[in-house]
Length: 140
View 1 (cartoon, rainbow, N blue to C red):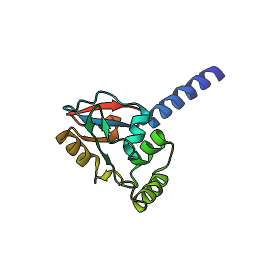
View 2 (tube, rainbow, N blue to C red; view 1 turned 30 degrees about the vertical axis):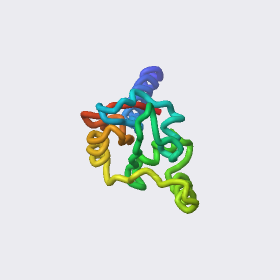
View 3 (cartoon, rainbow, N blue to C red; view 1 turned 90 degrees about the vertical axis):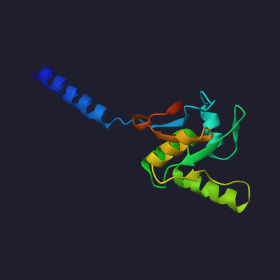
């Protein structure tokens, strides 16, 4: 009897846990982009303004809206910093004239449209919602 209850509990816990697992953000480019893949270091440098060209291509990073769960997860996974810490970083960079933050879009839909329309744009979306016409180049 105890083994049966334990087995039932483990099955229920596994089902509950698997429904809580959410795909994280991935970095995407246009299908026409010459960028095939990126390292975590390259992605970090692109989104903190230190890297502006990859494989001879000028890259223009796009950010999801401030407060977005995907944005928070992306920065935590890629840079090890929270979105708020990145906001402070960009305030210092702007103040000292050393850079501008990535362009902020209003939604994943807008990000997908922009990235799909220009091989230079690069952005991140939830892996489960990568739009058609975009290519995944980095998964944390």
